[in-house]
Each structure stands twice: as structure tokens, then as C-alpha cells.
Image (cartoon, rainbow, N blue to C red; front, top):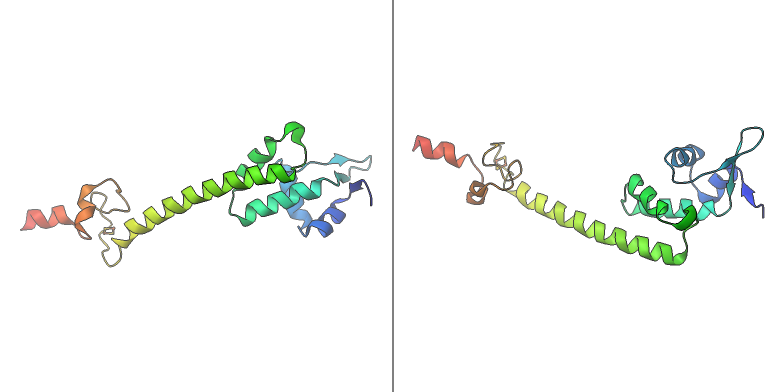
Length: 147
Ligand code: FES
């Protein structure tokens, strides 16, 4: 097995398109050295970095966050099993927080269904801290003035 991989070999073995690998490299997720002919050569260990990037993407982790995680590895080394356990645990917590946020937004959106007021003062979605949104859908202040 070769010590270094061309971009075609890395693409074939990782299942990631060469264009995506170049994108990852531009964004600091992986790195290569250049030959005298200016061709990319990747260390075999890059396969594991690409696998981690793909796993993070599959979990919905933004690429910038994945890059930050890879940057925490000493000397930008290849992630070990223990690294992956640590990073995946941290990302699981972040996903839980995002899910909680989305459920809260979903709850506020419920009051908008069938309403259509889009009121900056009373809509629970547009003005989540507004107590008037607890009264249900509708422009309550407007109704009060007209009563
Ligand atoms: S549109 Fe959101 S409460 Fe009316």
C-alpha cells in the first residue's frame, strides 16, 4: 500500500468526489503536499480525517465546526478512536441543544398556524418574549382598541 495517495486514490478509497476533497483542503479540513509537478499527495492517514469529516457532515455538524474540532488535535494529527469518541460526544450535546431550540421554535410556530397576523408585537414567532402571544393567535391589542 502506498505511503501517499493521489487525489484520485483518496477519492476512490473515501468515496468522496475529488472536487469535495479540494474544497475540504481549501477550508483547512485536510492538507496535502505538492509534488514537483504541482500535484497533490495526501498521507494515508488523511483517509481517517475524511471519514471524520463525512461522519460530522452526516450528523449535521457545520464544516467550520468540524474544522475547529480537527484543529484541536495535537500537531493536526489524525483522529484516533478516542478523539472520535470525544468529538462525537461533544457534537451529540450540540445536536441536543439544536433540537431543543428547534422544538421551541416549532412550539411558537404552532400559534401562527391559521393566524396570518405576522404582528411584530404579538406574534410568538416574531416576538418570542411577548406575553401577548400566550393569549393565542390574533392581534389582541388591535382588537382591544376596537372593542
Ligand atoms: S402570525 Fe404568528 S401569531 Fe399571528
